[in-house]
Length: 334
Image (cartoon, rainbow, N blue to C red; front, side):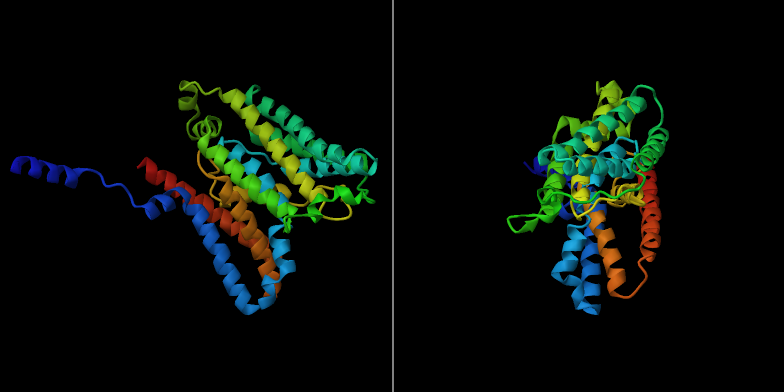
């Protein structure tokens, strides 16, 4: 009996201890927690300096006015998780907004004007995905080409003319659901659904496998080429949904590409915790990062600092995040 007790005690001492709940939580969602904490601290500090920062109008601008960026960043996060990237998403949203607005003004059914950008976005990105997956052209090269084609084509066709006289029923981003702005509802629901899908479905988990080690993923039977095309198509769908929110938030649509939109979307995914090398990250982080950018931009105005500093701050955040990711990967490989 004594021998058994001693052996059990020895095993309990030598057996690896399971990390605590908070340690496991931070290990899995460390970047997301840091971004959320930064948002909370920033809100608290700026609110003390200028209480008007938490006015209803400003909160609506922060959370709803930038929801289309968060939605686009969901699809971008999925693409980057697989080890790819898309620098044409800003130009695509500009083109899709023009198509959607033109259909609405021309008298087509409102549902058709909303559906068109989603379908066209999926079709365009399907072509990009095929070139990346089957022609083996790096995604940065394909999407740079798409960026030039979409941006140049948009200006050539429209001449920069704005779309006006949009039907009131078309402006869904100005409406509310259960007292909440529609863009906020879209952002939260789509983020949660995408997060669940990425974590708990075989398809979602396979994206991490592809980005983490493509050769190992192929050896386990994951159809990498088909998955790559599929994730670009899904990214196109999210770009289309983002377009609906972008195109319907004002009374007019500018027939130009939103400046630096693709950089903002990519940055939201990266700073939100998605490794630029693929294989890790969550869409929850990309949404939180979008809110952080919007909060920083608004905070600079309320503390009387030039809003141009926002780009510098975001640049520093990118460098810090990528450096931390590289150090984390080296630590794991050690």
